[in-house]
Image (tube, rainbow, N blue to C red; front, top):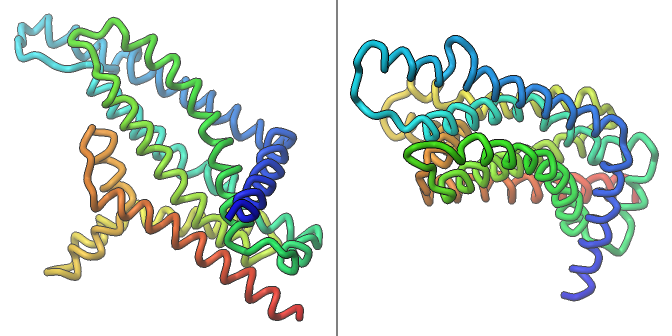
Length: 265
């Protein structure tokens, strides 16, 4: 067991170092921070933002209270989820495609390290990089919402961002599998985006189906379960679904690399 953990840690360190040494990864992080900051300002301070809407309600004499901090967090995390839909495939596209292109995938496939350990180490590395992208957002969210009345419960904010990380883990795991199928990073990104977009909107497709089939298909929706988490609702079925996507991606990746090793033997 100690050897397996050591192998996973070694792959994790190697993958994480490759991201922090990659100019393209910094470009993705910069775009993510820029767009998230722009949407943050728009949701709060634009003429149609929450602050302007609350001021308009006060002018109209509406006395019904509104939890501005909670409403803002829901809207902002929804935007971050949609933004991640575009950026996460770019992070996962090179996990195995680059190994294929450089010819080092054969070394990984024939090494004594199990395919599961390699896949898990790579997934943890790219997920850690994404978490470092999210952490700065928590800082200025906490600063902006610290003066909210009523105050926002920290557990709601943490649960919402945990949902974002779970969403990212599922997307990156499936993207890693797609990356293991091709040596083209562009193709891997496109295929991953198509797959995740399908899982994002599948609830709308399920609306056209009746009975248990529609319910089963709708349950596969990433958007549905992500929305529950950012609203502060812990749904066991949603957590199971995210865990299933993560494990499915790891399993399929391990099988893909095993098939590659078998073809080369």
